[in-house]
Image 1: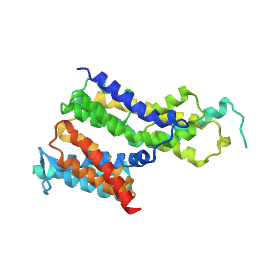
Image 2: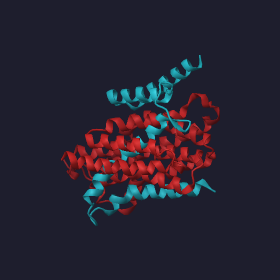
Image 3: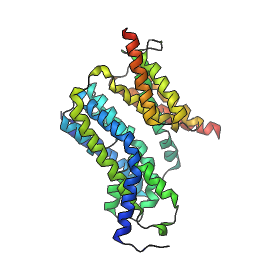
Length: 106
Length: 238
């Protein structure tokens, strides 16, 4: 199975999404419900990716203090809330994970 | 002051777009490199990994597609996930549409292709600055083009660097963790109101509960749940 074909299709759909309203404006009205629903796509999709990455370890939900990724993620979230700085958020999150991993390995 | 259409003002707009996009590249270049490294790690051939950066050209969707490929998801799930994750671009499309309405089909096509999160942020700032006064500059689409091309070129280049470095980065560095971290950085500033926060919380909880579903279908279920909860919360508070 060639992944190039899969990507071509994914790319085509992405392009169609980006072109959608640019091409349609003036020909059809944007339904109000659709416009409001699209507002929630970024927070919903991004959170749906983030949370399992932090909370699910080795196929099970782990909310304990031994879950290094959860702790590092919480530290990063605090930085993101306070600073809104992308690079700083990633930097602090990675540093926290590395420190926790080093401590656990001792 | 109405400047007559001339090559020099087009050029000036284009270069201003390139210049204003430049600071954002500091944040974009590391993601491009990390994507290249992760794509090789997930088992994608170098050519395919590089092609994804020019065909899909959407950072977060590429990260997730890479993850899905690595976990052995079927092709249809990869395509559907790329589509859902990139749906937010329809918002950007609706937002810039009035400003590019007068342009020809080729211009619309090129600008749509370049309509990423980062290019949109810079271009819409320029459009909003002088509102509906198109007479201020008739060549603002050249500014959009400059910003978009600058981002495009840096994304391709940083992907290539990541692919070249890929084999030399050990797994113990846990670089895959930069994916959730990037999204944490993007999502928290976006939670401006209660409805958005409710939407994020509902989607996140659904994704964790539905984690056992095959092929990451939980992601789709979570996205739909989050959108519905966001709309309901919006209605409840108004």
